[in-house]
Image 1 (cartoon, rainbow, N blue to C red):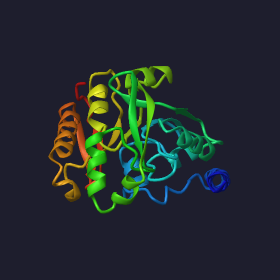
Image 2 (cartoon, rainbow, N blue to C red):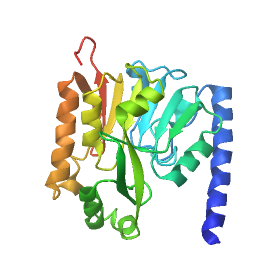
Image 3 (cartoon, one colour):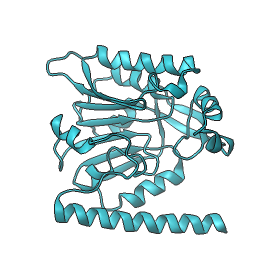
Length: 254
């Protein structure tokens, strides 16, 4: 009963938030960034990279609830078309409620390099398909609590190119965000093997995160993903210990 009440309350908050942010965007031309967005001056960075504040298409792989830690929610409020990819079904519902007034599509699958099924450890914003990452979260101070309460379920995976084709995403889509808690490398590899080349690409990479120093496999996978993106003609324009923003360079092959 308590879980049901919590769900209803969160839904009410999401609807109120959606109405308020959409109204603000219509009145002022701007919607606030997510309060938990981890990238400083993100609005200004997008403008500097040539992204319009009011039109474009984004794909966010690993949407969570469509607002928490989001790099795209304000763009959807301001008129962008969005594709949110999120395999945890209750989170898909949260995304739909948050963006009920926006032009977004929610894909209830996990993007990967193969189609089929896999297990995901559900632990809120740290939910992961990657066993190494789940193990790391059990050992890292800020991940222990969520990892100790994780549940496991089977989810459906689809190839990245299948998802993009189904949604008629243009090959030169303005923005793609990949934030999938340790499963970034297979998605980056699939992206680099496809004809899609986002103008701006944000990837969660932990190769420079001190809390992952003891996890060589995870750091190695992140470094490999970083090198693949750079080798394809992308320039890192921002990087911290969690996120890297890459911009496609004019005339670069790929």
